[in-house]
Image (cartoon, rainbow, N blue to C red):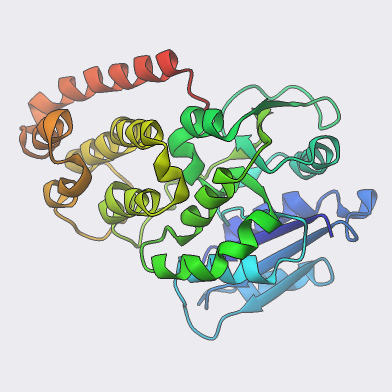
Length: 321
């Protein structure tokens, strides 16, 4: 088995069905059953996931947990069950190009890479036989991809870089970032890292997000995991991650929550308190105070300036997004 596609799911049958439709479209004509396995772990869904997945019988392996074990434990369960040389963990609410699977298999054949990142932005022109990838070291990868290393759907990783770390990752359960600690450990040992040269992944655009504490995960748990990973030896990476996370995710979401227009359904938090651990001093502390206390009418022009600043930083750094 070359590739294990590990899909965790919970009450998102409509999105899951669309993803599986894309992934299995080429199975019959390309005889992929002997090369690729699709594992779906249902975290005790209460919708009709089981019934809908019946149409994929014989193509996928599917199980339903007796109870909801939490998303990060569900990820680790999938990692444990995977038998392929490479593991891919797509989110159940994301979509990919209809030939992305063929593209991944071609990259494995040509590069035998350690780590592949599938872009979420960029051009969409060539077919899977013509598309290529940018090769770089793990340090270059970390610094240019930075916060997007947290997006699980974009990462395809050698299984022998994942499996030895599954047990140790259990200490990070509860913060939604146990999988990310494994990714960082895999990156630390990766020699050949690739980035797709075209867009391959279409993240969910319906704001099908929520059910957890946003700041607890993205302002704290991510950085707790980095601090406890081998990658933490690269102090510049931590600095880049903190800056990019603040500018690209934390401030924009804080602004949208202040505006009342956000479609997210996050659990209630005190943003100023939640940001204090890693963003409570200097520039970060000042901007946190501005975004959480300034009257909204004055915050709007400030937010426009910060969006422009974030874009300039991305261009200067030549970030891959």
